Amino acid sequence: MSALDDIIKERITKKETLISQNINPYPELVEKIDDMDSVLNNFEENQNVKVAGRVMSIRAHGALIFFHIKNDNAKIQILLKKDKLNDRFDLFLNTIDIGDFVYVFGNCFLTKTNEKTIEADGWKIISKSIRPIPNEFYGLEDIEEKYRKRYLDILINHDTKKVFDLRWKIIYQIREFLNKEKFVEVETPVLQAVYGGTLAKPFMTHLNDLDMDVYLRIAPEMFLKRVLVSGYPKIFEIARCFRNESIDREHNPEFTLLELYQAFANREDLMILMENLFKKLAIENNIDSFKDISVPFERISIIDFVKEKSGLNYFENDIDEFTKYLKDNKIEIEKGMSKAKMFDNIFKKFRSEIKGPAFVVDHPIDLSPLAKAKDDDKRLASRFQLLVNGLELCNGWSELNDPVEQSNRFKDQEEHKKAGDKEAHPYDKDFIEALEYGMPMAAGIGIGIDRLITVLAEAQTLRDTIIFPFMKNIN
Image (cartoon, rainbow, N blue to C red; front, side, top):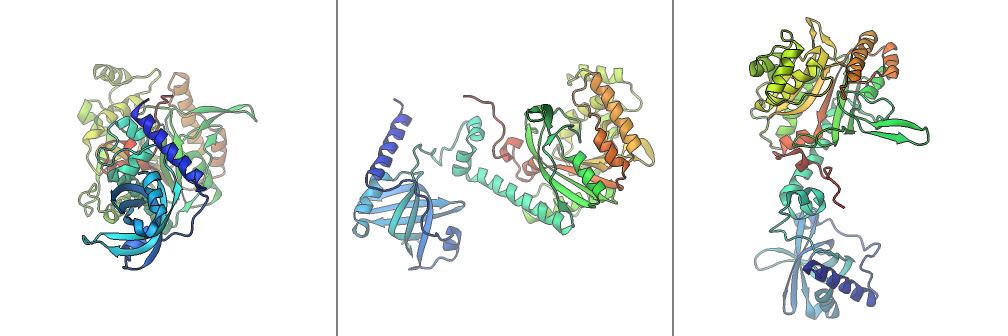
C-alpha cells in the first residue's frame, strides 16, 4: 500500500469517527455565513462573525490550535482554545485535516503580530476531504497534471487563479463595453446542419431522432447574419466553438469566440471600435500589452508582408511557385490546397514577427469567401486581422451581402472541397435565401477570447487561459 493510500484510509477512518458521533461530515446547510472579504476589510475587534472555508493550515500548540481557512481570495486565521471548546477541541484535533471545509463562529481579535483572527466559540465540519491537496509551496510540478487537474492548480497556485480572475473580469468588461455601444447579445445554434463562417474542419455527430449528421459550429457567423436580416442592427454572441484541428500553443479544439456585427458600417468602423475596446481593457486592467495607448495601431498589408518574407507576390506568382516554396521550406501542404491557403500558411509561418498591436489588412479575396471586395481593388477583401505578439486576436471584414456573388463564392469553395480541401466552406442554400431577402451593408468581427486573455495575462500558451483545456484520455 502506498503512502497516499495510507493517508486516504486514515481520512476515511476520521470520517467514520464523525459519523459514529452522529455528526454528518457533509451536511446540507449551515447557518448564514458572513462574507469573508467583508469581515477582513471591515475588521472590528470583538465583532461576532460566522465564516466558512477550506482549511489550508493547522498548527497545534498544547491547549491552542491555530488554523487558516480560505474562501475565494480571502484567508483568515482561526483560534481554538481547549478550555473553551472542551470535547470539540479534541474532536477537531482528531478528525480535521488540511483540505476539509469547516464553519466557524466567534469573535474577532488581533494577535500580538496584528494578524486578523477569529477566536472560535464553536465550529462544524461541512465537507470532509478524503484525498490530500498538494503542498502549496511545491505545487503541481507536472505541466500535464496542472492542466488535467486545474481545480488543484487554481486552489494552490495564486498566479493561476489570477489568470482566471482576469479572464472572467475581461469577459464582463467586454459585455459592458458592447452594451454601452448598444449591441444586443443573442444566441445561435451550436448544432448545425450546415457548418460555416470560416475555413476550418468541423466535428461531426449524428442526431438520432432525425437520422441525420450534424456539425458542431466552427463559428456563429452564418446565423448571426440571419439575425441582421431580421432587423437587429447591432448584435454579438460570446460563443463556444469547435474545430477539429491542431492542438498547440495557439489552438484548442473547443474555444470561446466573440462575434459581433454592425449594420450600416464597414471594416474601418470596426477597426476603430476594436482599437477603443482593446485600449480600454488595457487601461482598466493596468496591462502594458498595448504599449503606448495614445498611438494608433499600425497597419500592415498582408500582400506586402508575405512578399517581403518569402519573395512571393500573390498576384504575380502562380500556384506551382507557391507549392515549391512550401516544399522547400517544409510548410504543410494538404491535398487540394488552393493558392490562397498556401499564401495563408506562409503568412502564419512569419506572423510571430509582428509584435503589434497591428492591423493586417487587404487579404486576397480568394482567402475571404464571406468578405466584401474593396471598392478600389476587387482582388482584395475589405478585411483585417489584429495581431499582438504574433497572436491573431481578431478577424473582421465588411460583410458580403450580394446573394449572387456569395452564391458564386460558395460554388468556388465547393470545387476546392471536391479537390480535397477539408477546410473549404460548404454551400449554404438557406443562408443564400436569407441574403436574397436583403441584408444591410454591415461589418463583422470575431475575437478569440482565449487568445486575448493569453496576451493580456502574458501567459505562455492558450492552455494557461482555458480553465479545462482538452486533454487526452489516460484512463
